[in-house]
Image 1 (cartoon, one colour):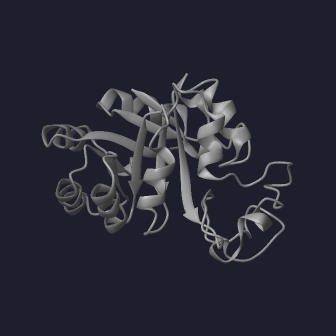
Image 2 (cartoon, rainbow, N blue to C red):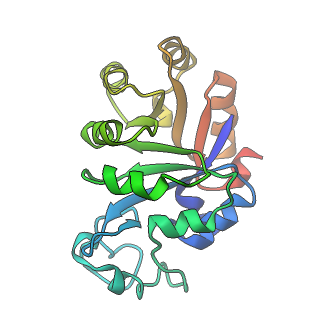
Length: 218
């Protein structure tokens, strides 16, 4: 079972920062991160639409240029908001990366950034059109993220040509995991909240878990 550090595992460092990704890489073979575009055009690694929750700054990321984002500090620490390219430069080659797209229109730039990286890359999104753009612009594998509508979501994933699905963990029974496997999908599930849930999902046959704390899978 693969273990994927959610936003680099916020239990060990501020989410979606280089500190989180490098710390997670010492213990895990996979990390997950969120990508959106800032005002100056770069792809930055940040979950929220606005800066408000994680910093003392306010305003939409999409309206803030990278030069200003570089000065933002995350969660009261010295950590800054990295670009997607920054993260790949910091990670060891062996660490696979699940890139979650938070919006559409990122496929071409994403493809350019990861074209020559040695890391395995899997692209996920709740937005089927964002994944369709990736499929049309690159050869990167894609995974459909969803939290409801099991059967409809499997149909969407199949239509997109996904090799993997990323359902919310509370949707998963052993029968549903078997159904997904029979349909040709691998199943990575998010965000699994504790060690007991990880153990139960492993026993049900899940292929991967997305977690906030590496200790949940030890």
